[in-house]
Length: 150
Image 1: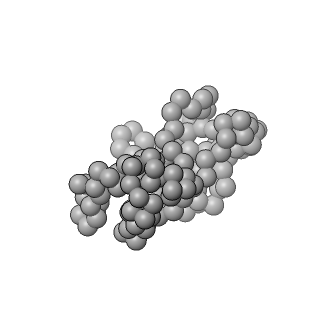
Image 2: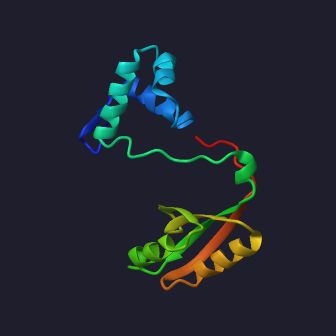
């Protein structure tokens, strides 16, 4: 069993359930039960327990590759002035093209994942992020293809 924040434990069976939902979060409980070799009520109980415990906070959308390819994606490595992390994060959350913000160690303070409908829009967003108060330096790389996403 694994501890989450020192409070919640996850059994190997619950981990299997989570892995199935990573494949398809909308997988019917009856199919989950069949794939795990358990009854539907047991699968439903495990799912509800994980939701109650906060292990599962919600379910998300994964776009079809053909549609997702219409977006231009990049990751931006961002260096911040000291004490600007919170204010920059607040400003980044207001930019709809910002999909994910990671706090990281090393030469940069964060990685910002950006998705735009065109290269022109991506360029504009990159410039917008680079000009935010507290942003000292950025380095961007366009994502050419996704080889694995779980």
